[in-house]
Image (cartoon, rainbow, N blue to C red; front, side, top):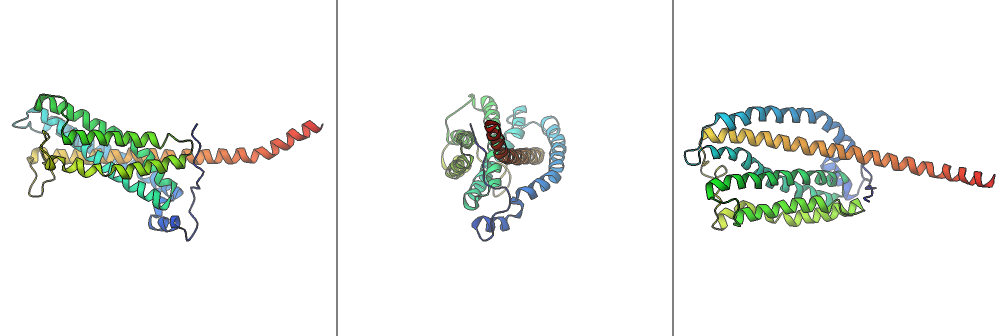
Length: 277
């Protein structure tokens, strides 16, 4: 059974590395984080719903079909944002893990713990939509080329982190092992990004982030960017909500543990009195 993390959620001692990290990242304080999250969460969620309410109908129904791919190009509006979020989210996981290892702040561990299931979800959606897109374009659901294989490895890294941080009775040890895995797995990110340039793959090269000019017509590019913004806001809102809930849950556990410890001496004395009587 997993035990609660006993590290204090309050401010660290002055002069320690954790204190210097807290000064650099003042919103890492759990109490301040909860107050900020309570204000930001409704706006972030509302913005995500509003942008997606505009972007998805524009992309799926109003944008023109591609002259080569026809209506199947509409998978692009889901697949590409999920791919961006899978890589960007893992970069965020690696940064948060580095912060947790350096400053040992439990809030960074909690954020990484709640990020990995969401990252695994978007990576799974990236793989699924890519498979749906690949069948009509390539004639196959899957090929073991560099881009697809490296994204599959990324998916396993997300799953591995989510499982590892929950695998230990000592929550702090699980968080530390997960942070090490996240940092090691970050080596895979440039492989995912540049695999289409380094190797000959079926997967097409970058079309939106090319240096000279995007390879997409504006009628496709603009709704794609709106959808990407909406999914990014939704991703951030979901991670924020999960982290906020985890902080509250940890505080409740700490209060219950403190109450149980306070009750132990009185219970013990009452038992002794009963035995003496």
